[in-house]
Image 1 (cartoon, protein in one colour):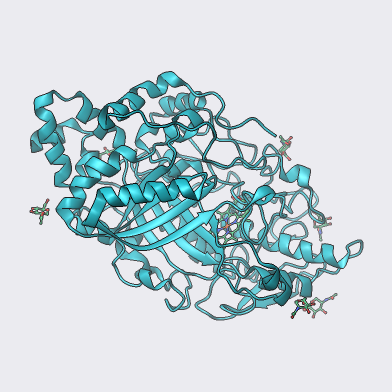
Image 2 (cartoon, protein in one colour):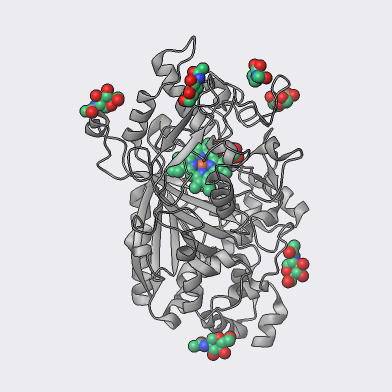
Length: 537
Ligand code: HEM
Ligand SMILES: *[C@@H]1O[C@H](CO)[C@@H](O)[C@H](O)[C@H]1NC(C)=O
Ligand SMILES: *[C@@H]1O[C@H](CO)[C@@H](O)[C@H](O)[C@H]1NC(C)=O
Ligand SMILES: *[C@@H]1O[C@H](CO)[C@@H](O)[C@H](O)[C@H]1NC(C)=O
Ligand SMILES: *[C@@H]1O[C@H](CO)[C@@H](O)[C@H](O)[C@H]1NC(C)=O
Ligand SMILES: *[C@@H]1O[C@H](CO)[C@@H](O)[C@H](O)[C@H]1NC(C)=O
Ligand SMILES: *[C@@H]1O[C@H](CO)[C@@H](O)[C@H](O)[C@H]1NC(C)=O
C-alpha cells in the first residue's frame, strides 16, 4: 500500500475557505475521516495540498477557483450524473447563488480528507442551458456551441438511435456531478438539494456510476486498469511521473497559459466537459478474445487470448504497457506509476514507423496518444483530462455463461479540455476513427473506433503476422463501445471569488451583490474583475 494521497492536510490553507463556507452556511459541516476518492497503486498519486499549492502559486493558478473534478482524474468512488433542465430561470439563478454555489467542491478541498465534504458537488452547463439563462457570449468553441447532434457525424456515431432518448434534443441544460464513497451519501445530498431547489430544475436523466468492487477498483468493465495516463498539469501536478505528458494549464482550463482562444472574462478557469455513456459488451468481448487467441510459441491458448486483449488496449489488465511487457502481463510493472507510463514506443532494436511487434499502431492508447509516433518532443495540442467512471453491475454468472449481455454496463466517459475540437473530438475523429492514422493501413482503434455503423478493420493485432486484420462490426458481437450520449458542457468556476465577495463586502453592499448574483450566474465569474461588477452596480 502506498501512502494515501490525502495524509497531510494543510489546515492553514483551508482556514480562509472553510470559515467563509461555515460563516455563510452558519453551520459547521461534518467532516470526513476517510477519502471519497479511490487510490489504486498504479495511478499517479494526487499532489498533497502543500505541493499543489506551491505549484499553483508559481504558475499563477488558483486551485480554489477550479471545480474539483477537473484536475483530479479517474478517482471517484461513487458518482451520480444528474442531468437537469432549468424551470423558472429567475428562481434557478437565485438558488444557484444561495443553494448550489456554497456546495461546489473545489480542487483544493478534494486534496485533503479533512476538507472533503461528505458528498462533493460540481456543476456544468450545456450551451442550451447557457442560452436558457440568457448567457449568449461566445465561449470560443464551436463544438460546444453546436451541441451533440451537430457532432454526431464527426464522431462516427451510427445515427442517434442508440442514444439515451433524453439526450435527443436540447432539453438538457446542465449536469450536477455528485461524488462520494457511498450511494447513501449521494442520495442524501440529492434529496437535500432537490428540496432546496424545488421546481427551479427538473431531473431529465441520471446515471449512477461506481468504481468496481475490491481489487477491480480503477479498472473499467473489460478488466483493464484505467486512469494511469492522464496528463500532469502545470501548476497542479507537483511531480510528473516518468513518461507522463505535462500539459499547460491552458490546455485543460480556459484563459490559462496555453489557451490561445479569446474567452469572455468570466470564463476563466472553466473547462469543457464532454460526457458519453459508452456501453460495453463485456461477455461478448471475452468470447471474442477466447475465440481469437494469438497463436505464438510459448503461449497457452488463454495467454494468447489475454495477449489479444492487451494489444487492443495497449496495456495489460494490470496496467502494464505492452510496449514494455510485450508477451506476458507484468503486474509489478503495472502497479508502479514510476515505470508504467515510461515509454514512447521507440526502441533501439525496432524501426518506429513500421515495427509493431511490441504495441500495435491501432492499440487504443497508441491511437489516443501516439507519443513518439508523431515526433519528439511529443505534440502538445491533443491532450485531455479523463475523469470517467464505470457504470452498471458486474457481469452475472448467467451473462458469463451465455456470452450475452443482459444488463447494461459501460463507461461513463468524462473528458475535460479547453478546446473540444483539439481534445475529445480530435482524438475520436481524427485519430481513433481514422484507419490511416498514424500510418496508412493500420486500421481503426478496436476499442472506440466508429465508422457510422460500417465495418471496422483493425490491423496489427497479431504480432506474428502483420498483414492479418480483424473486422469488427458496430452494435453486434464486436461492438465493444456503443456510443450513447454526448454532452458538451461548460464548467462554471470561480466560486471562491464569489464567496469572498459576499463575505468581505461591507454589509450594506451584500444585499445588492446578492441580487446581482441572482441576476445572472455569470457574474459569479465577473467578480474576478472588480471593475465589472462595480460598474454594473
Ligand atoms: C468504453 C470505452 C473506453 C474504454 C473501455 C477505454 C479504456 C481505456 C484504458 C483501459 C486505457 C488505459 C489506461 C490509461 O492509460 O490511463 C485508456 C487510455 C486512454 N483512453 Fe480510453 N477508453 C474508452 C474510451 C475512450 C474515449 C472515448 C477516448 C477519447 C476519445 C479515450 C481516450 C483515452 C486516452 C487519451 C487514454 C490515455 C492514452 C495515453 O495517455 O497513453 N478513451 N482507455
Ligand atoms: C438578456 O441579456 C441581455 C444582454 O445582457 C439583456 O439586454 C436582456 O434584457 C436579457 N433578457 C432577459 C430576459 O433577461
Ligand atoms: C485571459 O483573458 C484576458 C482578457 O481577455 C487576456 O488579456 C489574457 O491574455 C488571457 N490570458 C490567457 C493566458 O489566455
Ligand atoms: C524511464 O525510461 C528511460 C528510458 O528507457 C530510462 O532510462 C529510465 O531509467 C526510466 N525511468 C524509470 C523510473 O524507470
Ligand atoms: C521489431 O521489434 C522487435 C522488438 O522490439 C525486434 O525484436 C524485431 O527484430 C524487430 N523487427 C524488425 C523486422 O526489425
Ligand atoms: C460461450 O463462448 C465460448 C467461447 O466461444 C464457447 O465455448 C461457449 O460454448 C459459449 N457458450 C454458449 C452458451 O454459447
Ligand atoms: C498472415 O495473414 C494473412 C491474412 O490473414 C494470411 O493471408 C497469411 O497467410 C498469413 N501469413 C502467415 C505467415 O501466416
